[in-house]
Length: 134
Figure (cartoon, rainbow, N blue to C red):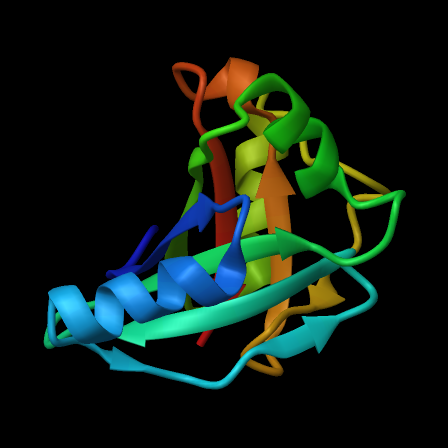
C-alpha cells in the first residue's frame, strides 16, 4: 500500500541555523521557508537525491511542534511521510486494521499541495506517520 519515503521531518529550535547547517556544512540543496498555517508550522525542505528532509518550526503558540520542542528542546525526528496512490483507500484500509487516524480523519492539504493524513504514533512503534497522496 505505501509507496516511497517522501520525507523525514525534523523539529528544530532554530530554523535558520538548521537550514544553514544542511546547506553549508552538508552541501545540500535547501528550499525557502514556507508557512503552513493549517498545520501550525513553518517548513524548509532539504532536497536529497532519493528523498527529502523537512525541517519543522512552530508557527504560533498553538503549534503542535511547540509542544514537541518543549519536550525535546534540541529538536528531533518528528515524523516520517510515505506516499500513497489513494489516500482515502489507504485511510479506510488502515482504519479497518485498527490504526487510528488523527484529527477528523479527513485529509488536509499538506506542504506539497497534496492531501495528507497522520496516523497515531502509538499504532506504529512510537513513530508519527504521515501519508501523502501522489
